[in-house]
Amino acid sequence: MSSSEDYTFVCSECGQSISVNEAMREALVENGCAVCGSPVSETDFEAKTDFEAEAASDS
Ligand SMILES: [Zn+2]
Image: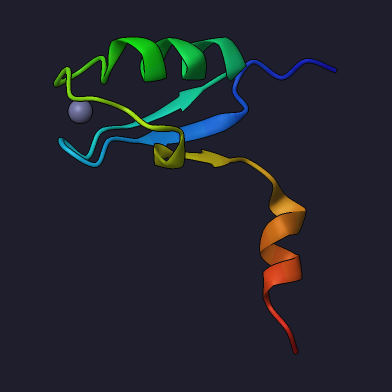
C-alpha cells in the first residue's frame, strides 16, 4: 500500500498548498518551494492521518 501523496505542504511564504509524497517532501526541503523558491523546513508539512485528528479531540 504505497499512497503517492502522504503529506500536505503549505508554503509559509506564498501560501501554496501541495500534496506531496516522501520523496517530494525531501526534494522541497532541499530545493525550496517550487512556486516561490523560498526555503522550506520540515515543519511546513503535515502528515495526512485521519485518525490523528480524531485523537486530538477529547470529549
Ligand atoms: Zn512558496
